[in-house]
Image (cartoon, rainbow, N blue to C red; front, top):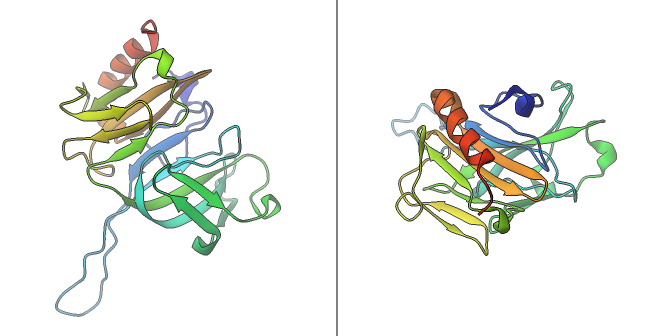
Length: 213
């Protein structure tokens, strides 16, 4: 990935690219109930995405969550300037991954801000590739530094824009990189991409420069 694509990389994340929106998925520690009882309840593990509103002002997590556990609005230029959003002010549609927030913009951080969204991802991981331009070819899908195979590793529904992994791909633990073309660029979401940075740079570069099919 060229530095020019990463000049506005999201805070504390493996990878983020700003086009219509920026998204990055990163590892988050498992949540447990640390009581003194002999049996400790294991709660579902969470992961998170950082995403900015798209050009229509809509917010999408792209990664499909079964439950949203935390939402924070954060100033892109000053990460100390942040506002915790009460969950009762949020409405999440897992079929589209759209997150609606019922808070006046005046109560959000001033300037450009993004959302840090924590939730429980589905397993195997599934995504909705919003604004995917189906006339520009299929999305790029890489797992553990290698190109994935449609039908064997994942499925993609061009109508619903849903990409679903077939294999046991964990949105929090597995290294993956997805990229899809939109009308004026492309969007990317990835997790643990530093583990295979050189391979992803090469693979994504070849995909981005390929002619439209």
